[in-house]
Amino acid sequence: MQLRSTCLSELKTAVFDTLVIGGGINGAVTAAALSARGARTALIDARDFAGGSSQQSSNLAWGGIKYMETFEFGLVNQLCASRNHLIRSFPSSVQEMRFFTVHEKDFRHSLLKLFAGTWLYWLIGRGFTRTPRLLSVAQVRAEEPVVKLDRCDGGFEYSDAYLVDNDARFVFQFVRSAMDAGCAAVNYVESEGATRGADGLWSVQACDRVSRERFVIRARTLVNACGAFVDHHNARSGQRTEHHHVLSKGIHLIVRRITDSRRILTFFADDGRLFFAIPMGDKTCIGTTDTRVDHATPHVTEEDRRFVLDNINKRLNLAEPLTTADIISERCGVRPLVVKGSGKGTADWLQMSRKHVVESRPQDGHVSIFGGKLTDCLNVGEELCAEIERMGVTLPQGRRRWYGEPQATRRTDFLRQCEALGIDAAAPVAGDRTSERLWRLYGEEAFGLLEEIRTDRRAAEVLVEGSGYMRCEFAYCARREMITTLEDFLRRRSKLELTLGRRALRAAPGLMEACRLLFGSQAQLQYDAYFAVTPSSAGSTLAPLAMAA
Image 1 (cartoon, rainbow, N blue to C red):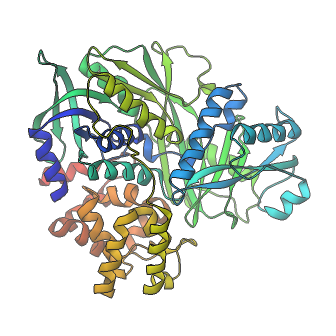
Image 2: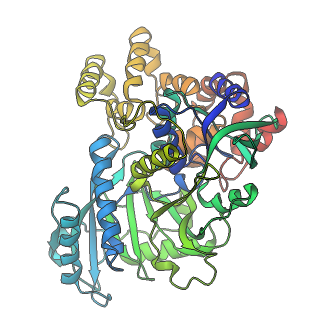
Image 3: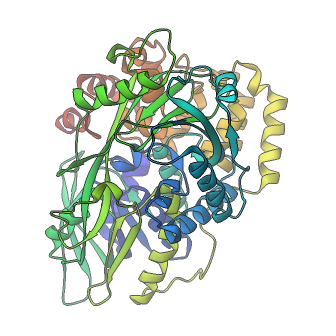
């Protein structure tokens, strides 16, 4: 935990140009952008990084095709441009994916109208992806025999993008980038409110949720990137804003793989909204729901499970219908949707888009980020740099690029070295070559892992069966990835909790050895804390750890 301790010490002693509160996608890109451009930046989150909505998404980076139905072509244009930019900037992590859709005869729009819409979508997307295809019933039957065709008159296929790894991992890459540029980033540090003094500095009352120590963080400017909790923190800090959130709950269920094809099956659920079956490693993620809620920490209900399972079973030819016994893991989060005013009485919230709004109060040195989608994250980082500059913070590095993967030549060199070492000799997990995964997750740092393997071949030993993760990766994550609880690694730095499930993880003989590499003498405590709680709330394993501290 040396990394966390070092960053904590800096939080307590330094005066920052900007303190970012909230380590989801909006906060992570803000911290990464500001740090890379020379601002002295701090980042805190009351839970783990990406511990809220940013770990509960569909893992899609899409251009918002559904917003075409409400004629929000400007938003679709922006999101398509952002999607394309993500694919170009992160070619290993954000990749084009085909969406395979069938059309039911009694749907509110005809098949040809929807297919024409996919071509318009392709054109708005600047022809960046593969072109759409119209599919006859016979073609659908031949290409995806798992899909029921009782009420269908055909289908179509178009492209968007998805995250090869999980959403929380993608968010953490920005956090790590921010730390590499000098940001003091610490998870499990909660802001209990902030005040601005006569000297123009913000004083944030912070609590380390691990040790229970309270201290003050000082900064010239404050960014509220608390996601679904933005309104809550503004109330704590006396900030009044024009915009607010209404919240929509979405859930996904992870089940066994339902098709061997590597594309996303797309349906229109019984309520008329898009419904997906998304590849997730060697499993399938199905969902989602859309239920208005009043609180930011919802749970999966039996009604939610029935909705998802009923919808998927109605639309697939499975040997045995999926039941709750087939659920390996679950995701449940809220979508923060932006409204002006309180949002009470909003009648058309089901049609609301996931656009983001940056509301700035220069006289207070305060910025609030409302809403947003992972697809548009790079724009959020750029906008926040501009807002912080307008508040008088100098960014010495100017317009320096703060995102993206290393040069393609470095990737080629890395894959060549992996081949020489035989890194891919073992069977890949869900077709994912180890060399490709190492490059996606660690970038330039992956060269150091190869050096460890050259020195000691035991470093390449896979500890947890079915995970693909090697001994050297656990040691690396302990040094570099601020893993405070076992859940941080299993649920957010990796997707092992999602694809293996807690039952398989408990039975995995190598998990305790992984805990020793991650936590040293605290391994048993971390292991017991992880399995002592239900996975319903992020950071729940902190309770027994805090008592032990």
